Image (tube, rainbow, N blue to C red; front, side):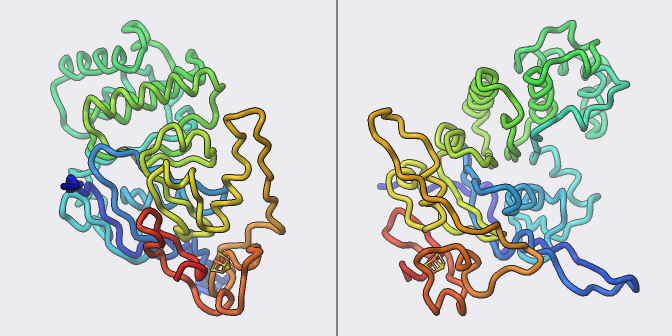
Amino acid sequence: MEEKREAVLRADNIKKYFPIRNTFGKVINNVKAVDGISLELYRGETYGLVGETGCGKSTLGRTLINLMPATEGDILFEGRNIAGMSERQVRPLRKKMQMIFQDPYTSLDPRMRVGDILAEVLQIQNIGKKEERQDMVMDMLGKVGLRPEQYYHFPHEFSGGQRQRIGLARAFILDPEFVVCDEPVSALDVSVQSQIINLLQDIQQEKKLTYLFISHDMSVIRYTSDRVGVMYLGHLVEEALTDYLFAKPLHPYTQVLMSAVPSANPHVKKKRIVLEGELPSPLNPPSGCVFHTRCPYAKDICRRECPQLREADGQHKVACHQYQ
Ligand code: SF4
């Protein structure tokens, strides 16, 4: 019998629009960064979210943990709807939902010692006394592969990889259950990337954490993720277990992304599919299927009706009229 998976977070029809106002403050249009996405994240899994720059994946990540309020939709975390909660209401849950950024340096106060930066995270949540917080920080520095004396160093004294270790320490010191990893290795050298990914995986196994792993790099997604969601212009267009998605991508956009991934076998040459045109603006997205302006299989119905994300073959969910 198939084991029932426990959903840590369930998002239902999430929209995140950024209003455009005229000089009188009247809303005249919206940038539709996320436009009706539903997904479930299960305990202990890594859900990879992939798509090209500007598709809305980082906005979705921030919205799911209520760093940005959703324009519409429900987000159930531990059975509570956090969409629409005020900052004060969400604060007790904040320590259970954390975020790791691409470049943590920009969010590290350059005048503070790293140990104090991490201790402050605990202090804000009223965790421990001063000496206890210091011990907890020392302990966490060791867990992410930094040395105890680095407690007293300033952010500029660290390399890029070490700064990302500080970013991990800042997220994990609150003992979260769900972590949004937003392009956490994109700014790092390839050799350092694997160290950070391995560290993320070790901590995940130890704590049974759930990750939303955002990346534009299909190879990183393949290596890190149990399931994958493919995003295009604010929409989720395909979702499947990683092995199924890489073995047989169904959505025409996923097929384009896959064609750019180098083959593991150097003797097998892959035909790269090149997309015509630019990613349309989320300020004025195409009617019907948002991919129809670049899709080689587009028909009349694609210009009129937006396809829903549905089961296609028992292994994939796809938003495409070819499968509905
Ligand atoms: Fe292409 Fe139509 Fe499918 Fe959209 S719905 S991906 S335009 S075939």
